[in-house]
Length: 545
Image (cartoon, rainbow, N blue to C red; front, side, top):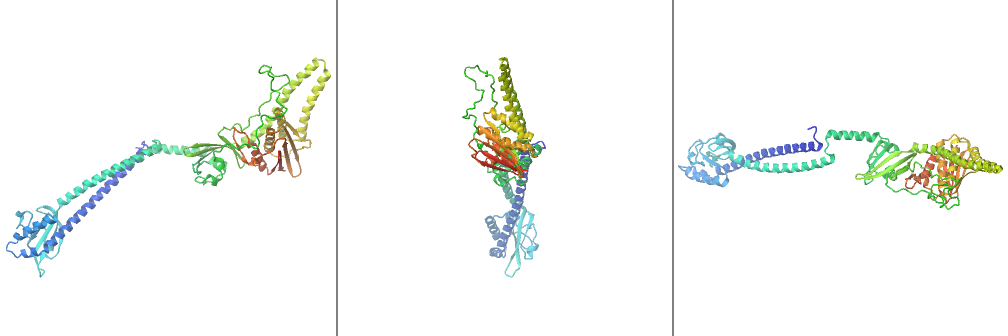
């Protein structure tokens, strides 16, 4: 039985309960029925006995020389009319005047008569000539109160038992019907339970619950189950930590918990600026090849522009959303189910910070790679000029290119003495050049190492520059520090910011790729206790020292 499924155990248990209940109910009913039938027989015998004893015909017949002549027909008529089994009229010594069997007339009455001789009417169960019977005995008194005779009427126990057997048959039929209905209902309940539990036993269900509970609360990722009416029905420890939910969050509406926007299956919101992959500028990528050249060939000295490096935003699956919750960057996946909506949360706060720092290093490496690529082209040009005997032109060409590259490096390093931030600016300069834009560091920019978190500064400066490059062809960056604050100003020649709420939207998807950068800027500025001002296409960030 231990290996039975839970549904089977419940079926057997319910059937056992039903059988015991019905058996007890039928037995109790039969006991009460027998008592009722006995009381009915006793009352009927007493009533008939008293009625016959008080009859004037009986008293007058006692004065005859042969009382049985008149009393026997009278007793039989009354017995037949009332339905009792016998009516016996006797003298005070117990000799019968009447009996259903005429052969018993004159015989001695079998039973007790002492109490009746004292003037009492009583009932008893006694075995007489007709077998055991429930009988009543009453005195026949004259006008002076003298007991002249006795009357006994009764119903046999066999007749009472016959009526009880009829009740037993009906009770058995009703009990069988009840058992059948209960068994059918129990089977239906058991079948439904078997489908819901997949035929598993209690031990297996217990193990599944333990495994489910252990896995649910052990994983670092957040898991939410939201019912169709918006009620939070399931929340693991990871979700409580990531969303800052209270311990009694389950059972409450998501709107009351402040996470309705996180769990809502909404499409991505467009970013504040439209992507500008095709700009109407005169600067076209040098990699556009003439139609006359064979596929894959390039003109000497040209370089192919690289596409924008993939960011963590691009690595998010199409059904995922990146959402900012407080100081955390969360990847939110919302999937419908038959129970409601399943929401999974993954924390990417540390990854986002490390990605920003890596982006600065990668930008610097890209700048070096681009410079090496261009240097090779220039070197070939210088060598060719020397071979042609144009030494002065070769020297002028080489020194001009070196002077331009060195001026950019000297200007950035001289203005920004924070190495991580300087590397970011050099990398973004190279990236802007490859994407057909111009990144300019204003001449009055000057910034020492202020001791701020370089990852926060990379997040702020890098995302502001990326946002400007996506929408414009010229970007100016101004950096300086005064006695109270550190100021970053990024301005471009684009259309400007159309939605000032972009700093707080904080969610996007791979299909759009916009909206998260400025939200990360807003998050970093808030963490540093700074402010952001927007005037058209100029973004000014002030961070206290």
